[in-house]
Amino acid sequence: AQSVSQHNHHVILSEAASLELGCNYSYGGTVNLFWYVQYPGQHLQLLLKYFSGDPLVKGIKGFEAEFIKSKFSFNLRKPSVQWSDTAEYFCAVNDYYGGSQGNLIFGKGTKLSVKP
Amino acid sequence: DAGVTQSPTHLIKTRGQHVTLRCSPISGHKSVSWYQQVLGQGPQFIFQYYEKEERGRGNFPDRFSARQFPNYSSELNVNALLLGDSALYLCASSLELGGDTQYFGPGTRLTVL
Image (cartoon, rainbow over the protein chains, first blue to last red):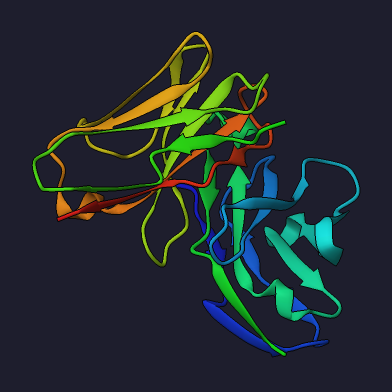
């Protein structure tokens, strides 16, 4: 079965520090990749997505992610975090091209705490 | 435009009872998916519906069922509730089936006592 691994359970950073959250998936075929964010008390929101093309994708609020096919990775980055980035971040994979009907497979999430 | 809406927001039930959760997709979206999120975990896929037909099912027991209505809204039903069913139930909608982007609602927090 497919799986998505997020390497860090909880990351604590000071404001202005750089962020990189790791995400690896197990499926070797064509996939669509997503990062979702869940701010405290709010619902899951789409941060960015990769379907095809340029492997470096930019999302909202200054986030970006790089798809590296050879490493089955889709790491999330931000050069300088703010206190308002405190949230839980989920990586998700959709292997529709592999035969599923398009359901998302999520990692366990990474909780980011940014100290002011 | 309104996003995905879900009702109720919170629900408390006792073991053995039945529960119905409701979801209205974004206007124009034809596909609805249901996910279960337990504390400390990522959402887990339960069902996907498209044009009123079940198009995908996750690894959940038969106590879980769902349906989609002609207006594309959806219901998730859970029978014979167990303590382990306590979770946040998320509904997501997408324009079409397949690899399309899914947009999530706020969820229904179910507590089973």
